[in-house]
Each structure stands twice: as structure tokens, then as C-alpha cells.
Image (cartoon, rainbow, N blue to C red; front, side, top):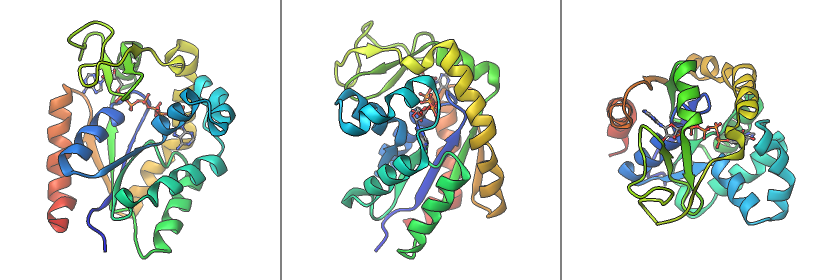
Length: 225
Ligand code: AP5
């Protein structure tokens, strides 16, 4: 029996989907599945998957669909996500979206809503160039917008903060190009099925959070209460 909806967070790189997906998942007590975090964890642990995907992730290219779909659908079948989850960074192209629809349909389930966080390109570049991430718990910080209390240390777990190798100017350019050609078509795909919730991603983290939570309460959460 489903306890929660399936909600996708979709945006260009750096728009804040990881930041918001983590906050909203905690607020709604839902599993948060971030494909980028799963890949980075595998790279850090030097697993066979990590070795296979490292060059794609660090250069800003999409990991091949077969690998990505297998990893995310596997994670989705874990007990904490069986009844619903927040998906952050997946799907990233039409093939992945169709694979997700098919896998959910086989269990009489479906994607409920897609939160699309819209941010100008100028703001994306500012957010990515100042980003720091916790090596341990992946919490994101920003040099200007959300600095940690102690320089270089995560407020939540005390872990070391680092800058992602795919936040270099060259990799960011590639990620934006990949986003506009492969991921942006998903905006229409989900709009056509009436699932898209477009949210203005400009403003503080808390302002954006309030917009997302109120849209989700209006459109989805009330039905699952
Ligand atoms: P992934 O980790 O998903 O990266 P991304 O999509 O490029 O997104 P980002 O994590 O860069 O940005 P975000 O939108 O989460 O922003 P954040 O919250 O951090 O993917 C990485 C790689 O993995 C891909 O390139 C690919 O190789 C591979 N991969 C992943 N999924 C895949 C898939 N499905 N298929 C194939 N390959 C896949 O915020 C950014 C910064 O802004 C932070 O510093 C934050 O503190 C700050 N910030 C956030 N919100 C605000 C705000 N409102 N105001 C001011 N600052 C803010």
C-alpha cells in the first residue's frame, strides 16, 4: 500500500534541486533519492560502478542510461522508497522518463508530480561557482548565500567541505549544454500529462522552499494525508 507520492525534482544544474529536495524530503518524511549523490558515493567508495561512471560524472556528461536506470530503479525498490519517494536528478532524458513510467506502471504506480525549479542562467552560474559540498553527508553550502558556520566544515556532521570536480568552468558548460538538449524536453513531457509544477527558483533557499511546499500541499500532499 502506498504511503507517499512519487515526486520528481527537475531543474538545470545549480538551480537548487538538491538543496530543496533534501529539505522537502525531510519535511514530508519521505525517501530522497539523488542520482548524482549515488554516483558520487560510488566514486568515493571506489566501487566497480564508481570506476565505470567517474569520467562521465567529472566531465559533466550523462552516465549511459542502462547503468543509471538500473541503479535508480534498484534504489527505488528499497523498503523506504517502495511506498513513494522524492527523485532528484532522475529522470534526465526521455528514455529514463519512459523507463521510470514503465517500472512504476508494472506495480500499478505512477509519477504524481514534477517540481520544475526555474532559475536564470546568470543565477545558475553564480550558484555553481560558489558551491561547496560535504564529503560525508553531501549537504550543499555556498560561499556567499549559505556559508558554513566554521569554514571548511559541515554544520550538520562536521565533515570536510570540497568543491565538485564538475563545477569547473568547462564541465559546467558541458552540463548546461547536456541539460538544454537532453533534459529540458522533459518539461513538455510532464506538462502534457498535467504533472508539472513550475516554481520560481530565484530568491533565498527559504523563499523557494515555501513556494515548493505550498504548491505540493495544494496539489499533492493533501490527497495523501
Ligand atoms: P547531479 O548531482 O544531479 O548534478 P546537477 O543536475 O548538475 O545538479 P547540481 O547538483 O549541480 O545542482 P542542484 O540543482 O542540485 O543545485 P544545488 O542544490 O546543489 O549530477 C551530477 C552528474 O551525475 C551529472 O552531470 C551526470 O554525470 C551524473 N548523473 C546524475 N543523474 C544522472 C542521470 N539521471 N542520468 C545520467 N547521468 C546522471 O545548489 C547549487 C548551489 O546553489 C549550492 O551551493 C547551494 O547552496 C546554492 N543554492 C541553492 N538554492 C539557492 C537559493 N535559493 N539561493 C541561493 N543559493 C542557492
